[in-house]
Amino acid sequence: MFLVFPTLRADHAAPAVMKKIAEHARRIVYLSAASVADNPDEHAEGIIGSHARMERLVEQSGMEWTFLRPSGFAANTLMWVDQIRAGDVVRWFHGAATRSLIHEHDIGAVAVRVLIEEGHGGAMYHLTGPSQLTQVEQAHAIGEAIGRPVRFEELAPEVARQELFAGAPATLVNSILNAHAKMVREPEPVTSTVEELTGAAARTFHQWALDHASDFR
Image (cartoon, rainbow, N blue to C red; front, side):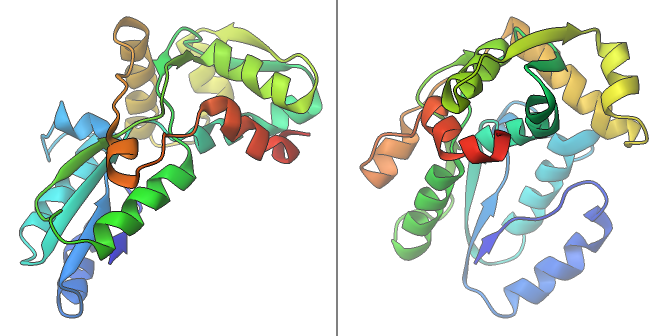
């Protein structure tokens, strides 16, 4: 089974869900997050703590397990769709945050491989795209894909909290803002794991932007 589990608000349902899965499956591949490797505290707040708790439940399930720990999803930039459709500016925070964003098709390709092949039990795979880009560069790449310039306008974190995340849980907002601030100081690393597991090079963010250009037009 390939498991993508909603974080934070569904934590309370996780033990019962895992018990039911274990009754029917012998192998599970859980879509976790790269930062769990650096902060495996299952009592931590926010998204990473939620993933850490799920990893512990999977480990305790009795099934053969594999963890996929991707860097940021390229698809998360779809949060900019409304702004880009409306104009040529992305108003966001921590433009210098540097990420090795991964195409969703590469996550899927790895998931298929480890589900159907033997020899991946107990593995924790760090998956990334093939290069690092700042958020400013991501906005420019989307502009290139849609054929018009897109620029990045920096928002102070507290302004972003009010304008972009009004009503969102504080633990979620704090984890997002803090993680991006850290990526300004410590860019996400690049791994070759996608190519090692699938035999094909990981897709670039520029390719992702071309694949999703219609979403932004």
